[in-house]
Length: 303
Image 1 (cartoon, rainbow, N blue to C red):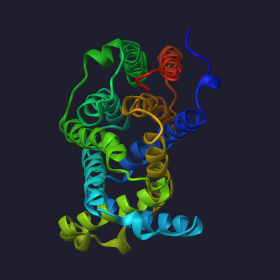
Image 2 (image 1 turned 120 degrees about the vertical axis):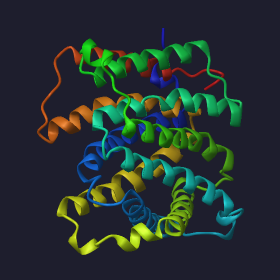
Image 3 (image 1 turned 90 degrees about the horizontal axis):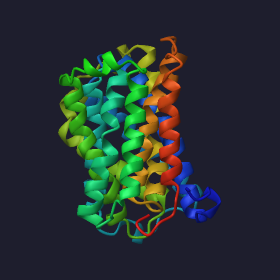
Image 4 (image 1 turned 90 degrees about the vertical axis):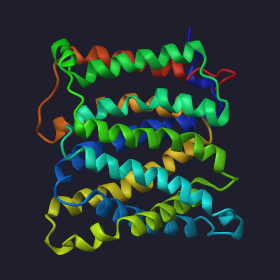
């Protein structure tokens, strides 16, 4: 039987709670991102969200005691991590130009398995048979949710250009997760997030300056600014902190296992935006995901 969450250490419980919140915040990016994907260049919106989020994180950092010289040892680390996450977000928006939010969420669920693989290659983190079974159960549950309990929809899955583009971004995200633990040298989550955002901003400004300058910022519709506000304060700043907080307390496979909750959250987002509710049978998929996450809460030598 799975161990009670009370048997987990305090850090592990906090790590799991952080990833639960992370999955809900990330889900909003799919629904809102799909709405505005064709109104602004991916490089432009990602660059601005990183810059504004870096400003927010700087305020948090100063409120918590400020920066120290030791925080910026080996600054190349922030360029590596910022580049990986910037690539993920740029390709996400590029993919959402044609991919539907729920379809993109289906691609997102491939990340836990990839993160487990990169976790082994970079950190020698072992995915036990029990954890692999839990990840597989969660994947099946997620697919059941994604396709709204419709087997014919699953069999007709069309892996289009948007999904393919986003898949490449998901590979970047899966590499990023274990790299956080490998490159962190004791910096707290807020400072490390700030460095990562600054690194990503610099790379985006260098590589995407044409798209940034070509954007008519004054003519953008209001929904773009609403989406940008959400992305900066919730989907970027908050999710960065939550992800980095969790990756310092949990193995990469467990961290990314929470990606399986994202499709369920996306369905809730879509329903909230007036796109309807799924059929009741979808609840079976949510139950399978919940059971898998309970299994993943068990403390073990690999975790």
